[in-house]
Length: 65
Image (cartoon, rainbow, N blue to C red):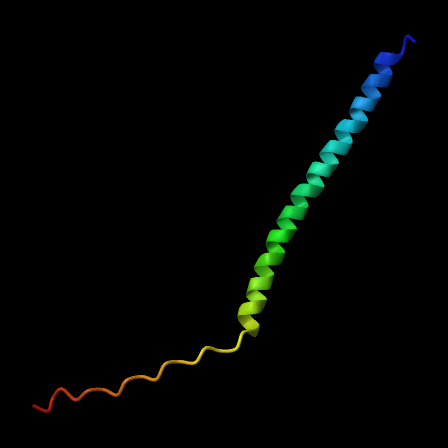
């Protein structure tokens, strides 16, 4: 019964380590999801069919007056 302080310290250290690991993984997952979204948008832009250019208007001949 004299060593509950050591037991508490050990459990506290383990829970702190688990918490830090989960926070690290969570942060990394968020960064990877952002990078994945950026890559998906780049891929969508590259594979999208080209937009049809509007037909240019014929030049008006201003010199005829």
